[in-house]
Length: 335
Image 1 (cartoon, rainbow, N blue to C red):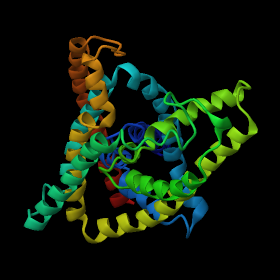
Image 2: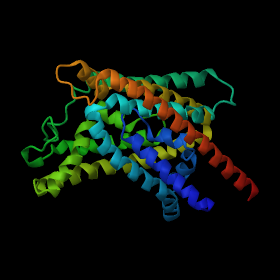
Image 3: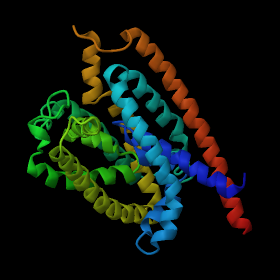
Image 4: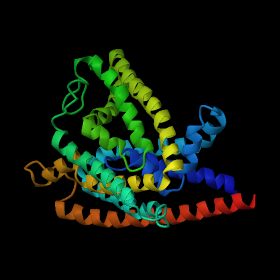
């Protein structure tokens, strides 16, 4: 297998990791991209899409395919896992984040520590932690299912007619979600959880099944197209805005930017274990109605095991990414 093919397969694998991460509250797709040493390279391709669209799109295609391959089954799998194995799946992803931390610290280990860097790190750490705290405090209060015209279980009501203002709100929601996808350490799914959009948008996946089985109607189909269309418009606007900003920050203030990224990532570890979804699950463990697949002690034990597995996998990926980056540097030097 030649080097070009290996690089494309590596990009597909990296994209799959980014897609899976994007589906989990508290995990950042941008962080996975940094850990796998594809962030800078593909940020350049994203930033130059408007100048040379097709060459840059083709360069991004393996990564985009990987994201689709990762995010679609991840959303389906985690929708199932969130019903009865939340702690275990969260622990696996906490391990993936911890194992990849050396890749982030590589960016700052040879630089002089300045007070401003520490301040930036603490600010982003606090923001990431507060996302989890706010989701616990306000997640149940912000119940958008009624405005999406769905029941508490996510089923259609009123023929699937969605409140008109939600279409407008979904555009800025998409913009911020795009920012969260591009900026390492910020979880777009966590943002959606805090704002109350995570579960309603996740539930829309089952609505397609209603349409395909003949239980839906054209009004429902139009609502789905409107929801995804407005979200996509926001994502595109946010994407092109934040890509330029991130490239500027990495070019001009790279070390300070990575201190901020590290703060976000460390704070996200807290938010992984303390957000609206998992706190409800903790209560579910000890409640009268327990929907967990395993007893609490068994799941905690398996969760610790998955944490270790996640660390091992992520660290191995980090070491391989180091090897790939070194080879690319040597090849560019020899060229």
